[in-house]
Image 1 (cartoon, one colour):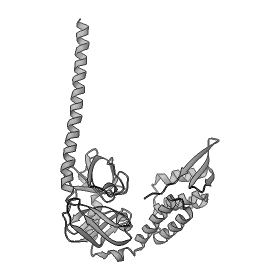
Image 2 (tube, one colour):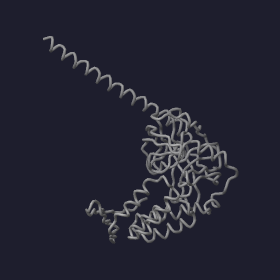
Image 3 (cartoon, helix red, strand yellow):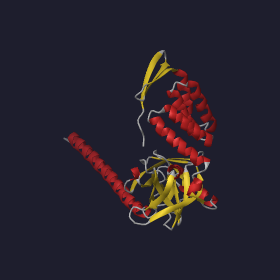
Image 4 (spheres, one colour):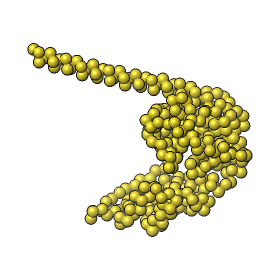
Length: 336
């Protein structure tokens, strides 16, 4: 009887511990949900949807007349005006030009006609690994939305914030926020990464006069981005030779972009030009020696026996590994 009582007591203790754990998880999630609502209300006063032709993205006010976004968002709108609009107001601002940009960091500071409410820029040195962070923006260029995640790493060497925040196309240029609603960085691309707010501060401090949008679009680095984007679309559409032509143009305008060489290497490999692909990967490696992906690709090329390209866009790569033939099939699709 005494033994049964001990077992029952143990189960009661375990049950109580489980209930307390569940209650804590629910409470923490409730706190995060409440915090998201608070961050959302604050950030929506400053976070704009940028629209141009043929693309767009997100941006946010960093001064009353200046909006931070990604370089590729600004450079991706190749003709016509760029406009900015909040999710809950009818006011539409016209982008007059660019006051500062860093193509490598993928940041541009736009000058608008009119005024908005700037987000405060946080001190990155006070960030803590593991703290909750928030991303405000327009995923897929649809409705305004704020999502949460965790700050995983702060890489000062190449100026990156690594987070678990889930982002989508359209979130490019979105502000990454701390629990106070301060911008700790700017989201870049479709992954889980952001450039720290210090990079934005540096650009704001270095800005002098505005360059009209039409003139800025004539810059070689901007033209290079245009050809690079066009080449990627052709590459994914299966037009490999056309993609290489565009990558050639992009490199002519900007020979210091490692990503262009990497894509041209992929295209050359699809045409079974292994030496050309090797040369491009090596050039990319000179520009970015710490890129582990390039080292991996160079090793893979050494094992390739044959590359077969079919009319439907399918590519079959035959490689040798441990005296075995490995067959890898790649089906490319159009990307938007």
